[in-house]
Image 1 (cartoon, rainbow, N blue to C red):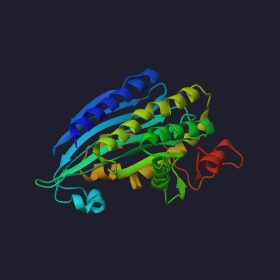
Image 2: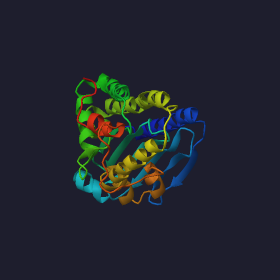
Image 3: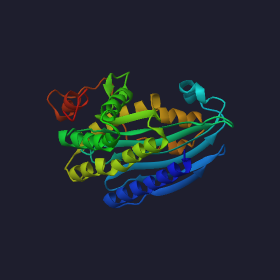
Length: 299
C-alpha cells in the first residue's frame, strides 16, 4: 500500500480539473490552502460569479486523526482504536445557465493503522449529474463515460456502481432521485491496492471528458427568468441532500473539518416553495417524468 502515491495523484487531479474549468469559464479560481489543528490540511479552489459557472468548488483534503468520528465508527467498528488518515478530491459545479446540469465528483482514500497489525484501507468515489432541463444525449454520454472508465476492471462494476449511485443519491423524504445518477462506490478494496487504485484513477481521469462536452453543448443556449427560477427551486433539493444524507459532509463536520471547505458545494442562489408542482406538459414537468426516474440510460 502506497498512500503517498494516492496523495500525489489526488493533488494532480485537482490541478488538472481546475485548469480545465478555467479554460472554459475564462475566470480564475481562488486557491485557499488550510491546515487542520488535529493534523493534515488541504486546498480549496473556488470560482464564484464566473462566466459559465455561478459557483465551482474543487477541494483537496488530507486529514489525520486518532479517533474516528461517529459516522465512521458506526459504519466501520473494525477501524476503532486506530490512527487514521483520509484524503480525497471532491467537487461540485453549479452552472449559471440552467440548461447545463450541476455535477458532483469525488475520489477518496481512507486508511486506519495500528502498530503490529495490517492496515485497514479502502477507496471510494464516483460522479453524478443533476440536470434542471434534461437532454437524453447528455445523460447517455455521461453514463457511457462512467461505464468505459470501469470496463477494464470487469463488466460487473458499472451496473453495480450505478445501482449504488441511484440508491445513495435519493431523497427519501421527497421520494425522488437527486438527478440522473452516474456511479458511486465506497469501502472498495476487493481488487487489491494496485488495481483498486487504478480503478479510482480511471474514474477521476474520466470526469473532464464526461462533463465538459455537455457544458460546451449547453453553455450558449438562451434562457430567461423562468428557467433561472426553476433552477433555483431544484437547487433546494441539492442542499437538502447534502445537509441531511451526504456522508462526506457528515464525516467532515464530525471530524472537526474546515467548515468553509466542507460547504463549498452549496449553490449560491436557492429557492424553496410550499407544495409547488410544475405545470402539466411543461419542460419542467418533463424533468420529473422523463429524467428523475429509475432508468438504464445505456439500454
